[in-house]
Structures are given as structure tokens and as C-alpha cells.
Length: 527
Image (cartoon, rainbow, N blue to C red; front, side):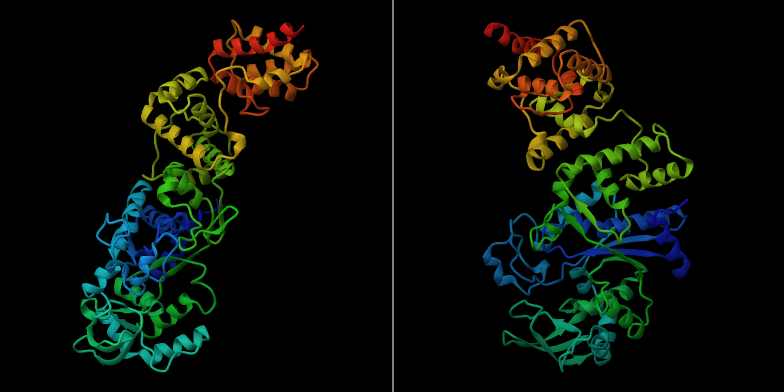
């Protein structure tokens, strides 16, 4: 049986790095944290779970890069935030005033989402790590070897380094910025550097208490050693030739004397028709919004099913239904409700397990297909009371035993209809016979009357009703599509709609019979 990619990565790491592992992941909370970011954290979590399954006791940490400076005024920020460019995110006020600082504003909802997804790392904040001295020794090493690091960066990246380059940026005591300082002196015994800032201020910074920060290409390998990281996922941009991973490997080995973590490179997640997800460009679906649209296990499945080096295109439109139906099939195979050979069943079982927030999944219960819920929620006009009646009529009484889950699934459908559904999926059951019914042919009206007559005193399931509709169409000299168009026209006032048989069964029997008879009678009145 082919191993799941997370199991393969775990096995490779165990073979090359032994059995003591700390898996790290981290994101800069500079904006809304989105589905693309989740691939980073999920990749780490999936490999972490695989290590656990091999009776290893690994550690999973999440590093919030809260000490990174604000790079620019992003589209979601007011222009007034220009004054904070260059300042650490943890030192900038929350844009909405609800959290302690800018970084926490974007970090807190993300951590809540991780909890819902079943991802439970130890959360470390970079600004606190620097203040608490976690980086003190590696900063001393980096500053002592700055010429060597400069040479390595130039050699590997191919770019010329400035003459007085420093791996450390001082936090200016006057303007509060990390960028723009020139280091003029270094005293390792006191953990101090002297600096001149672009703002004109000259001062001394103590890097053992968070008054300075390593530049990114040095901060990354320094973090590996300081935190004893053995495995870490990162995006393909860092893995490019001459990129930050290549320079990080050289600095880690040749300066810090530390073997770099086992690399887990991942591709981007693209938003259909818009490009790679990015908070800075506004092309993104935030993880909070996503969890209002689909269950957490489906979010996990979306990422777990694809090897990290394969890009994922997320389409919240019609393709979302296909994603949910794929997951439903996986679940049926896992519970033995759909045939599969032994290898396929085992692979499905492993993928199903990795997709569950709790690692196990719920006890098997009847599921309401998303496609059917989309139809039912519209028939019910968003009322949960009416929804229960609709689902009961269409054979989902058992699913209604868990009202909390049913209510949650209705909310998923309503969010999709409101924000992402293509027009073809949206309809409204007309309270009165639509005027469009006047355009039906005589044959269509006669067929509608036959359907009404056969539905009286008859309680078919969806398969039986579908067969009856095809029979009526043939007997009336109509193509099946012409009969379906007539049904949609008299109920919805449009020529298309949801799959006819389940749709009819979801409606009140008296209503559908009365409406079909009413439409058929219009021709008799004309005659």
C-alpha cells in the first residue's frame, strides 16, 4: 500500500534525524490569516500526527512572527497606518481596538480556528522570545560571524551585500522602528550593539531583552538552533535556488553548527480565477470565513488529500459541492458502505483519520448531502422549523436526530448561497402560479396533470418518482427535459432547477399537486 505523504515524511525524518522531534510552523500575523496559510500549519500537524502514530513523542510549536515589522499599508488598513511602517507588529495598535496589539488582532481568530481544526501546538510569540533571551546566544554567534554570513549570503543568493552589513537590526528607542538602523559597535559580553537610526537617533540596544532583531535570512536558521527545530514546512518561494532555505542551510551548518530541519516544501493554494492566496493583495478566503462555509474535517481533507508539492485550486463556487461529495464518498468507503479493494480501503481509512479534528471522527450517522441541503434550505426560506419538515418529507428523519449538526449544516448551505453559489443554484418557490406558466405547451400541461394525478395517493421514493416522470414524458410525446422545464416553470418561474424528483419530494404534497393542477387547468380555461 502506498503511504500517505505525511507518513512518508515522518518515516524519512525518523531515518535521518532519529526519534527526538520538534515540528515547527509559523506565520507573520500581518493580516487576515487565510486558507493558504493553513496549508503551512496543517502540513506540520499532519506529519506531527504521523510521528505520534509511530509511538514517538514529538513536539509541535507554532511561532507567531509578531516581532516582524509592518512592511506597508495593506489594502485592509487605513492610510493612517503609514506612520507604523517599520515598527514591530506587536508594538502597533490593533486596527479595531479589540486586542492588545496589531499582531494579536489577526492572531487570536486564527488560534480559535486552529482549535476548531484540531491543531493544538504550543504557541510562541517572537517578540516575547526575543525579550526573554531565547535568541541571545545565537545573536552573539551571528554578530561574531557577520563577515562570514555576509559572504555566504552573497555566494548563495548571488547578490552583492552592503559594506557595513549587519545581521541585526536595532529597535530604535526614539522612532520605534526596526528598519533603517546602522550598527556601529558590538559588545558581546554585555549583549549590546550601538546604532545610528535613519531618524537621526544614536543609541545602544541590549539584544538580550528584545531591543534588536535578526534579519529574516539569519533569523530563520538562528531559530532552528535556538528552539531545537527538527522539521518545518515552508512555501516554495523559500525553496527557490538561492532562496532563504538555501542560505539558511549554509548559515545553520557553517555558523551555528546545527543540522537544518527536515524540509517540507509546499505549493500555494490558489483562489479560482484570482491567483495565489495572499492577504497583502486581498486574494484570499480567511480561515474564519472558510469554517463558516464547510466543516473543519473537510478543510483538513482538502489539504491532506494533496501532496504538499502539488498546488491546490480552491473554488468556493460549484466545485465546492464536488469537494463535499468527495469527502462523503471517502466517509462511505471508510465505514464500509461503498465497495473498495483492500488497499484502497486502507488508504481511505488513513486519509479519513488524518482529516478528523480529533483524529477519530464521529460515530457514523446519516448525512444530508450538501446539494440536497442547498435545495432544502431554500424551500424552507432559512427557517429551521420548516427545514425539519422539508427533510422529513424527503427521507432524512434519521439525520434530524442530531438537530445541532443539522442546524450547522443548514448554516453552511445558507452562507454558500449568500456568498458563493452560481445563479443556477439559487431559486425561490413562488407562492402563486408564475406568469411564465402561460407559455407552456398543451402537451406540457397535460403531462403536468398526469403527474398530479399519479402523485395523489402515491408515496414514491426519489428513484420511483424519477422513473414515473420519464414514463409520463414519454406517454405525453415530450422529451424528459420538456417535462422537467414545465415543472420548474410552474413552481419556480424558471426553466431550470434542482434535480426534479428529490425537489418534488421536498415540497408539501398538497402544494405540488394543487400547483400542477392549477397550471394544467389554465389550458382548459383557454379552450
